[in-house]
Image (cartoon, rainbow, N blue to C red):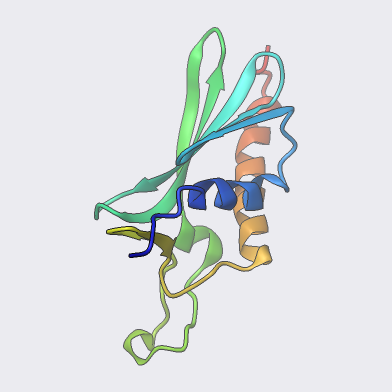
Amino acid sequence: MMKKNKRFFETEFQRIIVYIAFQEVLIIGRICYGRLNKNMCLKMEFVTQEIAGKYSALKASLLHFRRGMVDCIILEFVDIMGIKQIDNSGFKNGFQPYIWEYENIIEWFFYQPSEEDYQSLANAINSYMHMFMEKGVHT
């Protein structure tokens, strides 16, 4: 029997955070914390939305160490990566990428994101963070 890849989410975060300038990073399971400065950090987590075990989005929360949550956003993979064409007759109109957790397996379902896809996720997160950092929330 195949064992669950307990490091799957950690590996996925590492593929995203190489494009984000964090001062410190802590990854625990499906959650990643990245320190932006002395007062702010970003919390990212892979989330399900409608179906248990189907991770279709990345939730990003901007946290202030004294004031708590500043804001959060859910970035659906399909909105960032787009509809993917795969070699499967069951998906003639394309496929919305997601991570699938079933029994002892965690993996991308039918589609493995490209380096460009990971960079697109990071770019969306960077844009989100910078919008708040430029407004002076970091003080």
